[in-house]
Length: 82
Image (cartoon, rainbow, N blue to C red; front, side, top):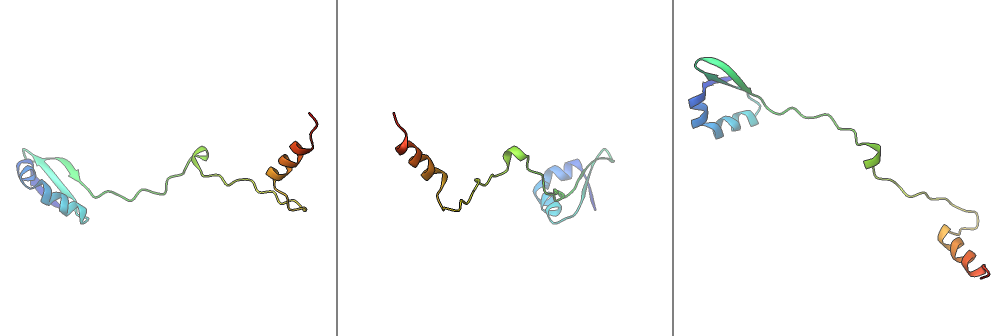
């Protein structure tokens, strides 16, 4: 862990972020007292996707005659009497 005063952190912020990116922790002091720790981001666990956001697969029903639902609807319309 690297410890440094706020003034030094301000002067070298980019370099300190590089250290944190590599996995080190940086403690920032103000008037000699610790006020913040810069720590690397922890990998988040896989978030659950709500059911309403999940991709749905279309319902596929296989009929013995091999016709699709669309084909059945078209046949019914052709046979209907108006």
